Image 1 (cartoon, each protein chain N blue to C red):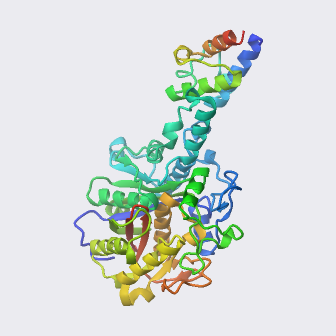
Image 2: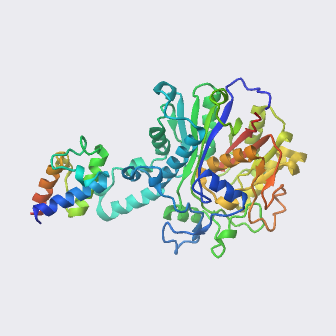
Image 3: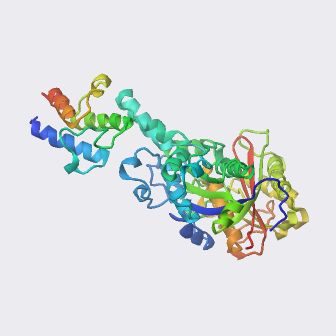
Length: 80
Length: 420
């Protein structure tokens, strides 16, 4: 899976799940601070990533995914 | 207006919001009700082909995003979506705006009843659990399922910082919510209460469960004619869904701000049969006491009651017991009481029924018009009541709304016309 492909799909999942425009989603955006998620929204987003990429994100790992870049890095590492 | 014998604060109804199988707002629902239209049709919420009952009164074309931001919709089971829609419409109707300060809002509360809570979400999440394991359960499973989150979501939406909870008493849930809200205002503990009921149980477990009790009509070849309270051909109730929400407010406060007062809530009776799991007590004994409590609280004689919106679910036993209870309360005056069984058109909205029917009762008083009872082609002689298949003008000062539930629970609400 190409890194660029992962980035586009991650951003699409975030846009749909948090109902924010794609243009507002930057690599350094934090889900809670910048994109309007709350603690439950983060869990839901994590489930959506699992579904989209057919992966498992353990709870202790998902705790460390705070930004869009964090999510891309984790998913890209899983997919390799 | 009656002499106010109660010591407490008088309670006005200043807002009404409805989402019903007859329409997505109050005006549409009320107009359809007066026209005698019904909300029944084949079940579309799930594949019901294997069920004994394959029709229901569904809410049609409801778009939750009309009332809830898109990303919040997934936090809310359908019953909460209905509650949010009805509560926002009621609030807007009452004209209670954003200018209210935080301290005033501490004296504004919300009680929304539900008989079943988020059944559809429970079913879907259980499927996720079985198919994919516990780690895939949604974080919104619990908050969209538990029954008190209808009131919780409404409070967040409207900024109601006072008392907040849920009444869960089967088909009396909505009526209990209204009665308890009434008590809080009457005792001076709250100034405004957003109260009512919400339900969305047209689901696999909902239909299957009530089918297992043999409670539902199985007239699959004639959904339109299936809900027929007080008719000799009735064979069970028809499941409905939706929400009915009222804004209650201290009468003095409502008048001071120039609000439209649709009616005054003057009596709340609540009893239990202590008799049987699902069947009412003989001669509607518990229901009689609930109605008598209402009359006593308002300090009126039964002769001044002009209308009863009956519980009347279209079950063979329940309708007779209610008719007997009405006969015992009203005696020789019974033929002068215009009775309506609106479930003949809406179906039975379970925990929402009390909210929806209280709103209908208030509108009946406000417009001095009693809705029809549909499908009354062969009135059951055991239910000798003044019923009509057409809407009728009735000059009345007082009207009762009855709601009874499994567990033998009975609620009556007594409303008075406001002459201003």
